[in-house]
Length: 159
Image (cartoon, rainbow, N blue to C red; front, side):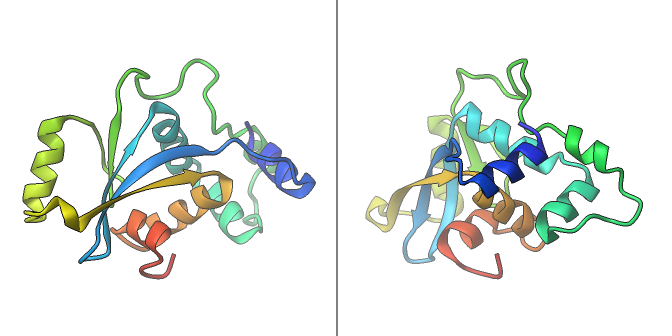
């Protein structure tokens, strides 16, 4: 789907297909430790983060840069028709700073140890959906912070 298709869907009120992830939240710190995400979520995230800077500015400010090639922005695709960027059979761990790793039991335990979490009662799982608006919030927060998931999904910070 191109950027212009996003904009026209938003203007026409067309319901978009949202991607789901499961955020693991440390309640006492009110922080997203990581999101457990599928291929679709990670591909969507990677495509957003690989958009040309001019397109990012246009999307975040609703204005185009002087001298920006409007046709170039129209051709920018956020969905690879040949299968995406990451493998589909793997579940991914998206960290608060958007570092992406394959999910495993060991990596989950390592994260819990890193944050000194002894009681699983202090953890909460929240299912979040990400569409165009949430994607733009993630993109904007990634330019301003290293706690992107926390800022966007828990409301901490300026995102």
